[in-house]
Length: 87
Image 1 (cartoon, rainbow, N blue to C red):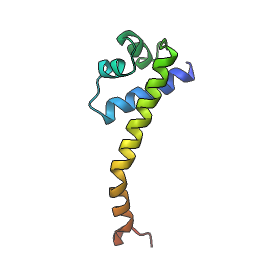
Image 2: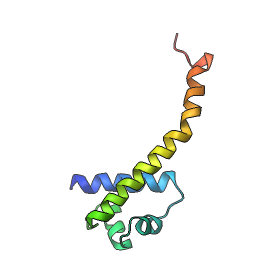
Image 3: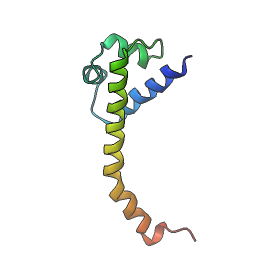
């Protein structure tokens, strides 16, 4: 199996799990067909054009940055909690 297909399947899975996006939403956002997204998601083939591939990576990066940014106060709070220190 092509490593690129596995990477993009992982990206699509992450977007589905961490957002309210459906496969259709993702296809619309990256300007590709549902057929192309379904093929990548089912690890059968990767036929997404280069410009859509870049949009998928940018979407993934934006969602990652948002999730890290929103989790940061919680992480800092946990690290400063007296019970979180290792003895």
